[in-house]
Length: 154
Image 1 (tube, one colour):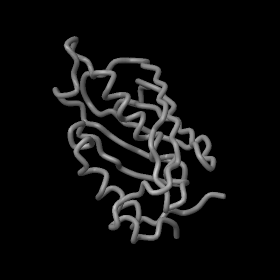
Image 2 (tube, rainbow, N blue to C red):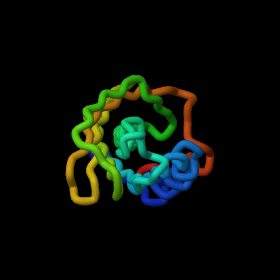
Image 3 (cartoon, rainbow, N blue to C red):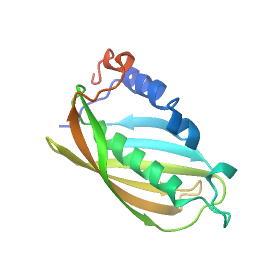
Image 4 (cartoon, rainbow, N blue to C red):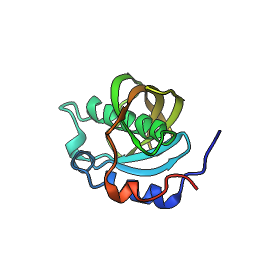
């Protein structure tokens, strides 16, 4: 059953996630979360390049993992947390400029495990990478109080 996510909850999550040290290091931004979906972006910068002048595979892995994770997390009970236990990636084309746009979707969320899928495209919609991420639901692992105090669903 699809639920409507509270826009105030999305803003609270973005306010917690986007300034976290790893997201800042990658310049990764969580743009949106919807029921079973997530949208992230990374503006390509020199810091993302490997010696051959294209974006390092680890940057693709980061945005694929995050997009799949947040898509699955969107359907999780507000009281639980998640962590990635597996990430599978197919690199399909290089990037050297523009934006990496990560789109995630939840394939399935069970009681203990979830499966997300994500793609990375460039500004022109060219498919650059595809991945799946398996996440483990964990009791006691939760978002900070400023997010937990906002109702997740309308």
